[in-house]
Image 1 (cartoon, rainbow, N blue to C red):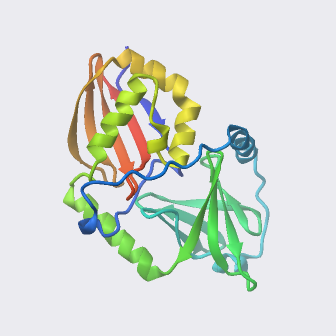
Image 2 (spheres, rainbow, N blue to C red):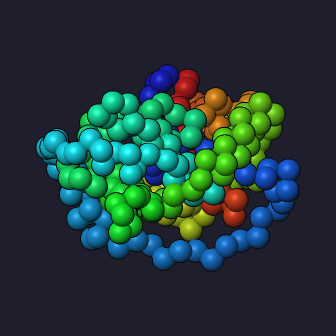
Length: 263
C-alpha cells in the first residue's frame, strides 16, 4: 500500500518550483503545440550529474567581486533569480522561495550546501555579470540579467496569480495526461520541459511502481493555488489518492510536478 506522506517528487530546478505568470490576462485558453526539443544526451547528463554531485571546497575570494553579481536573472518566462549580498556572503532566491546562501568555489562559480547544484556567472570586460548559469540535474540552464523593473513586474504577476487562486489554462488537462502516462509507464516527455523530462527519466522505475500500486486514475479536482504558485489538485486513483502540484510554461510545457501520496 502507498502510505500517507510518501512523496514522489519530479522537479527540474532548485527546490520545489515556484513561478511567476507574466501578462496572465492575455494568456490564451488554448495553447498551440510546440515543437518538441530533442532529448538531452543521457551520457552527457550522467557526466554533468557526476560533476555537480562531487564534493565542493569553499575558497576565499575578493568580497568586492560580489557586487558584480547582485541583481536579477530570468531563468525562464516564469522564474527569476534575485542575487543579493549580505556582508561578504552571496544569497540566491528563486521567485516564491527562500533565499539561500551560496559559497564560492571559484571567483565566478558558487555552490549550494543544501543540494548538488551550483550557479556560475558570465561577466563582461569590466567583470559585471551579464547572466548566470544554473548547474543542476545534469543540465546547465542560462539566465540572462534583467533590470529591476522587469523583475518587479514578474513578481507582481506572481503575487496576483496566487491571490486569484485560479488554475493556469490547461493545467488540469496536462496533469491528467501526465498522470495517465505514468499509470501506463509511458509519460509524455515531449510535453515536459527539458529539466523535468530529465528528472522524470531518472526516477521512472520508482514512479512506475508507485503508480502501478495506485491503480487507474479516476478523477482530478482543483483545490487552489499554493503559496509558491503551483496549481494544486487532488487526484483519486483506484487504490488511493495524491495531492498534485503542477506548473506550466506559457507554451503549455509541464515545468514542475510534485506528488504527495495519501491513503
